[in-house]
Amino acid sequence: MKKILQDLSYQELEELTLSLGEKKFRAKQLYDGIMQGKTIDGISSLSKAFKERLKELYENEPIKIKETYYSSDGTEKYLFEFADGNLVEGVLMKYKYGYTQCVSTQVGCRMGCKFCASTLNGLIRNLSAGEILSQILLVNALHKSDVKEGAGKDGRAVTNIVLMGSGEPLDNYDEVIKFMRLLTAEGGVCISARNVSLSTCGIVPKMYRLADEGFPLNLTVSLHATDDVDRERVMPIAKAYKIPEILKACDYYFKKTGRRYYFEYTLIAGENCDEEHAKSLIKLLKGKPCHVNLIRLNEVKERDLKALDDKSAYRFLGVLERGGLSATLRRQIGADIGGACGQLRASYMEKKSD
Ligand code: SAH
Image: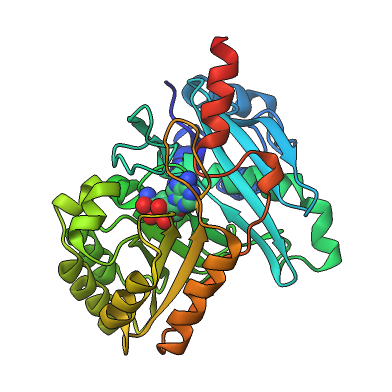
């Protein structure tokens, strides 16, 4: 597989430009073109000869949108295809304050969570920093015309990122950190770390490393249980890292970054959402600088886990709130366009193999 220009920082692009015998100002044109989501061929300010040289060394079009699905609530889902034919999915959620894009960090995943479709076939490969970034570049380009309506600052439609697509971000640590540098670079996509949420199943040593990087991003931990025995049933990673260790790492994160942290708690009927569980959750988290996001389970047909009904979900939320926790039940959006969490890719692959 050829290299991709999206992996390079501005400085590296400048070095590349000079090494190919081009003037320095061409690097700026190249960088701007990349940040606008263009292919090498599509950057009209560059000479044909320069573009040909670039294409010998780099992929012309490292990513494309294979399919787009539109929900009646405005949410969009994309199936992205990389140069090697691998697929990941992404979601764009439109809010009043801007657009939030859900981005993938790996093709597949090796964490094995029982409720998640991304992990059904294990990990295929890591995405590079540039491949993670290119998902956003493409969606910004797609929604260029929305910017006029005030969706984004700095001429970009996407204002917020959640690293909650396929993959475990902390299992692809170096590329994810590099992605954060590319994302927050001046003159680039202009999304600050404060507008990025990184969701992890709780790889404790990497959580400490992340705290030390100094990015003020929103750390989100997938908890989904209130004790380790229950957690191990749905999340194999719980065998390696226990809840008390995770909570300690979260507190370290808060100490280092001053940012409160988040927990995701997917409500699985008969598994983790009785009143007793709510009470245990309160005991576990009360007084901590955290917020709990309750998620409705998107039922994955390969698994027999069931979603909790809405009334019980609100009752669970009520118990948490009365117990003094800051909590919300995440609005279900885009449900009419194929669930979430790897289900789109899985169903596409299945269709293809029929
Ligand atoms: N690997 C990261 C990112 C995963 S996706 C992590 O584990 O946090 C983001 C969230 O969606 C996680 O909390 C994940 O557990 C949850 N999730 C995965 N599949 C789901 C499903 N079918 N229904 C509801 N939530 C799901």
